[in-house]
Image (tube, rainbow, N blue to C red; front, top):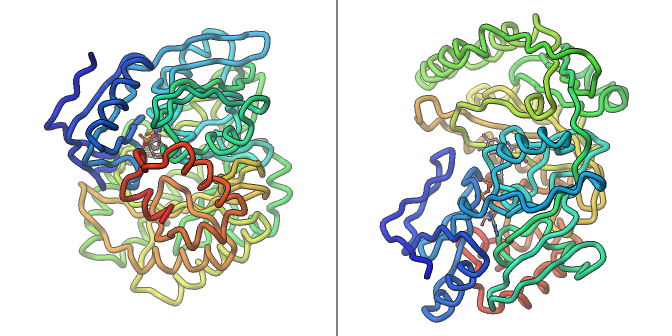
Length: 440
Ligand SMILES: Cc1cc2nc3c(=O)[nH]c(=O)nc-3n(C[C@H](O)[C@H](O)[C@H](O)COP(=O)(O)OP(=O)(O)OC[C@H]3O[C@@H](n4cnc5c(N)ncnc54)[C@H](O)[C@@H]3O)c2cc1C
C-alpha cells in the first residue's frame, strides 16, 4: 500500500510558484499509481503529477494529491539497432544522458537544463534550437499512460494514433505518463562557436545562418545592437573545454547578480550591464568542443521570470525590431539580457507551438537578483502584444495571460485535444487552476 504524506510544500525551481498538497506520493510502480488514482476517485480529489518541478509557472501546482515520479526513474530497454530507449517517465534527463553516452547514443536535442523529467519535458513542449529539429516531444515514438479510470493505454504512430498526437504534449492533463520511448541518435562530439554581429545584420541574414549551422541560435542584448551568434554542430575535433575563467568559475555570476541588484535601485544601469556582459562574454572566446549534452546544457544559476513564444519563422525580423523600437522609445522600461532566439521545425502534435509551421522562439527574461522581484509587467504586456500580432503561441511552461479563447484561435487542433481529454478524464481529475484557464 503506497502511503501519502501530508505537510509537503512544493515549490517550482524558480521559487515563483508553490502549493501545499494535501497528500504527497512517491510511487515506485504502475500498481502504486493505480492505488493513488483509486483513492483520489473515492475521495473526489484532484491529482497533479510532477517531474523535475522546473516549469516557471503554476502548471505543476495542486492543493489535492501530488504524485512525484522521482522513484519511477529506470531505463527499461535500450534498442541499439533502432537507437531507441524506453524509460520510466520520472527519469531525469541528466541521468538519461549519462546512460545513453555509455551505450554510444544521445538525444538529438535538449533544453538548456537536464534536471527535468522525461514526461515533464514533453508535458510542456520543451524545445531548443535547430530548424531541422522539432521540439523534444517529436523525439517520442511511443508512450504508456494510466487514465483517471486506472486503465493503462499505449500509444504510438501505429496504435491509438490520435491519442499519440495529443499525448506527446500532454500538459499533465490526460493521465499519468508511465513510460516513454525516445528515438535517439548516435553519440557525437559537438563544436560550439560564437561570433557577433549587429542585430539588423543577423536578421537580414537569417536564412544563411539557419543553413550554416544545424543548431543555430542567437542572443540579443537589449538596449544595444549587440548579438552573439551561436553555432552548434557535430565535429571530429578533439574535446577542448576551453574554460571561460570569467563565467565558468562563477566570477561572472556573482558580479552580474550584484550589479543587477544595484540596478533595482538604479534601473538606468541595465543598458550598461548588458553592454558590459556582451563585451566580456562574447567578444573574445570563439570555440569549445565537448560531448553533445554538455554543449546543449547551460548552467543556469539565476531565478527569473520568463516568457517564450513561438512565432512563424518569417515574422522573426518584424517582431524583434518592433520590440527593440518599443524599448528605445520607452526608456523607463529596462530589459535584462539575453533575449534568446531559437528555431524549431514544424510538427503535427496537437498542442505544439510549432504545429504545422516552422517557428522562431523569442525568449525574454527578467532576473531576480538575490530573489528580489523586479518590475516586468509593462515589458511583459508589450512583448505579448507583439507576439500575438505576429500569430504567436506561448510556451506552455512559461508566463502568459492566454485563456481558452486564445488557444481556440491559435491551435487548429485545440478542439480535438479537448475532446480527447474530456473522454479520458470526464471528471477533471488531472485539472488544476492553471489548466482550468486553458480548458475553460
Ligand atoms: C533553468 C531552466 C531552463 C529551462 N530551459 C528551457 C529550454 O531551454 N527550453 C524550453 O523549452 N524550456 C525550458 N525550461 C522549461 C522546462 O523545460 C519545462 O518547464 C519542463 O516542462 C520542465 O520539466 P519538469 O520535469 O521539471 O516538468 P514539471 O514542471 O515537473 O511538469 C511539467 C508538466 O508536466 C506534467 N508531468 C510531469 N510528469 C508527468 C507524468 N509522469 N505524467 C503526467 N504529467 C506529468 C506536470 O503535471 C506539468 O503539467 C527551462 C526551465 C528552467 C527552470
